[in-house]
Structure formats: C-alpha cells, structure tokens
Amino acid sequence: MALSKSYSMVPRFLFQKRVILCFQGHYVNRQPEDIHGQCQKFEFQRRTFINFPQQSKTREYSGRQLVGHTMEQMFEVVSDVENYYKFVPWCKKSVVLLKTPARLKADLIVGFPPINESYTSNVTLVKPHLVKAECTDGKLFHHMLTLWRFSPGLKREQQSCVVDFQITFEFRSAFHSHLSNLFFDQVARQMEGAFIREVGRRYGPASMQPRNLLLNNNHAIKS
Image (tube, rainbow, N blue to C red; front, top):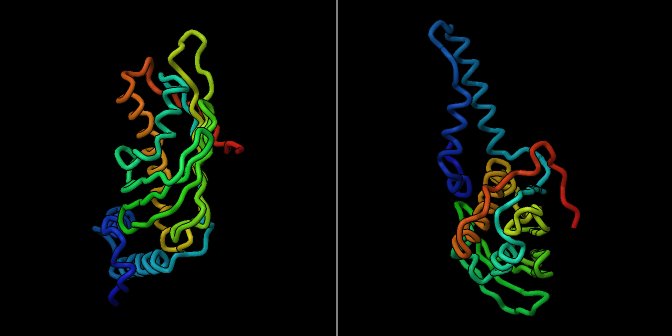
C-alpha cells in the first residue's frame, strides 16, 4: 500500500532505523514460521508508527550549565533575536518588529524537514538575568515557552556564570508531535550549545569548559 503524500515527507532514515532495530539478531536456524512471525511483528510496528498512537503533545527540556562566560555576554547573545538566523539551528529567518529595553516582538521561521513554519514571539528582557520568549500565534504551536536565566558563577572566576535553559511547547499537529518525540532532546541540546558557541565566537575563548550541573536532576525550572 502506498503511503499518503503527508507521510512521504517523513525523512527516509526514520523508516530505515525502524527496520534495523526490528531485524537485529541471527536468523540462521529460524524455521519459516518463525520468520513469518517476525515479519508480522514488523508490519504491526510499522502500522503503529504511521498511525501515531495517542500520547502527550507537550514536550519539555531543562538544562543547567556552568560556562566560562559572563552573565552580560550570555544575555547579549540570547537577546539578539534579529541575528538568530545566523547561528541558531533550523532558524531560517528572524525579524524584530518591536524592541525596547524590556521587551521585543519578532517573527521567526523554523525549517527542518518536514517542518517549515513561521510564528511570532514576544520576548521579555531583564538584563542581564533573564530572556523569556513566548509564542503568541502561528500554525505550528499551541504554545511555546523558551526561558533563559543567568546567575553568577564561580567566585574565583569572574568570567563565569550559571545558565539555566528551559524550553516547553506543544505542537498543533499530531504528525509534528510524533516526529518531535524521536529527536526533541537532541534538537534542544544543539540549540543550547549553539548559543554558548556563539558567545565564544563574539567574545573570545571561554575561561573553562561548560560543566553540566543537572547530572541526575531533570527538574523543570519554574518561570
């Protein structure tokens, strides 16, 4: 049975990975009926994947790192929304519509197969402590919140700070939600790392390597 047009947009590697995981192992001494059973199992898994089983569409990621940059440097990069398209993964366009010292409003376009959508973000700025961005409209999300908090780092190292990063969102589409379940954590970590690398590019090498402060603690940051 041919897949519908919407499912043909799913990156081929997702299906390839499914096949590899399902057919791991040795089949040398399998009887024909055993092989038939394995094929039935794969067919069931494939149908389950395509039918998008019911699950929560809300995703959340929290990170906390000690970095070798100052609060002011981190704040300047994270609040530089108009240049997101230059260094934030999958951000294709970022246009600031309104900007004051305390807030800004921007239109952004994100694009990675099969998503290519625009949304408007309202950003609250508390220099150098906080950057909070909320999606106010768009076809892609029911809601989206991105929260950055910056606090002092090590007393013995002035060029350091603690970065708390949280992103939570809910897709409107069950299709997009299912895809996000497959790679959301990787995307969030890459976004977090992109900002830290951009600070280093603008202000020079970090005074230390980033240190994960949430090793076994995945609690959410309250906004």
